[in-house]
Image (cartoon, rainbow over all chains, first blue to last red; front, side):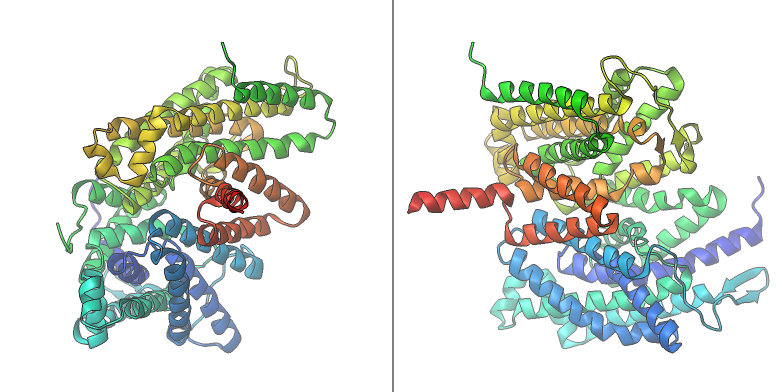
Length: 293
Length: 315
């Protein structure tokens, strides 16, 4: 079998664009799970919630999906803060976060899914704008706008979070709480308040990620399940909380999935994430840019 | 020789179940009963690892589905009788469970949980791409219309499931009250400390994961014959995984009868809601009940009852 250069080029381009989008999806988990050690398995459910609210804003007011996603971010931030408060009061304070906390988020995921099934049914929903459906042609390469816009938005958001965490006082406090909670407490800062803000930030990214998700393709309430494996694979491969690591890992996964879908078959693509995840867990649990070995 | 009340009750339940199956007219009772018993076995199996050792398995549906598809493949290949299919499905899933046990060497806590979820999805992809057992379109099973000793096939399945459930509970009870149970509890409380005290942690974990896997496989094997049409979506239903976690958590994970109580209670409620209201609401209620219980009653119903008893004795 000879390799068709145009097919390969398109597969690679699609993979990189998809990977950028995956970074937006995994970014929130990289903060909540990677840095705060909160196993928020419901993160994809929050993303789907974002998709549906964007769908409502887009259908009701004709808002651009990306703009709608940005408008929703503060709302999601508040929701995130509230969820963390419940989680802290019920689990973290009593030190039973591992098993009970996992079950809590597992249950939360189901509650969110079913609420959207009850509200919107199990049909696929999608958004409409002028640019969705068009594409740019560069030589043999065709780049659809519905992939390019999410990629750009995702990279901007990832960059923004990276700058926030590394340059601002609050961002550094979040990094500090993930490294040594006790030390932060001794410096006179309240780790719970900081974790609350960080968790809110993680959930806020889900609003925009949800907007990007519904731009890329139609969404139904349980679609988030497909992303559980992907985002955990990305966060673990990226090195638990490293933002640049998350972006790199997301693009690796996007490329791998795109190539597998093109050359082996689309039905094998979901296996890629879990294959990568299992291999990473087995051979390099600290990830590519890990915090510690 | 002294026979413990547990065995007498077990045999009585089995005989009672058979007589019930002979007399009951309403076929729906068998279907509902089968579903409740199926989730009971899954809950008991999950608890052998999750409750006794503290390793969370998110991939229950994977074991269940591999059991179901092993049965399908062998049924198409050999036309073997159901009991043979169940045994082989148990062996296959037991071996997968053994493999999972070796994962615990490197992965603890949440990493183990994610790895089991990953395994389930890898299995789902494999089966979706395996045309022999129907691939993504699924497979039909034609069940015989007449069976010896029973009025209908579904009656036979119901009694079979009752038997399997009782065996599962007996195995779980044995693991819990024997020396093995003490070792498993030691792993749950502090694995490193247990290891230092000379508890053979790896061997115990391997026993635990193998029994769990085998039990889930056994539970999945009759499933294709129960629904007569199976596809990867229904076999890998995430509700199976959630139920098998929610039921022990609601009943109480530390003791062998916790998941039994949780499964009977939640399973029955689910059947009633599915029939009277809708299956979506059924999932919503599982979610809400699970969240409320883990947040407010961490030791489940068993823990609540124990607290009440303690207070009464105090007065």
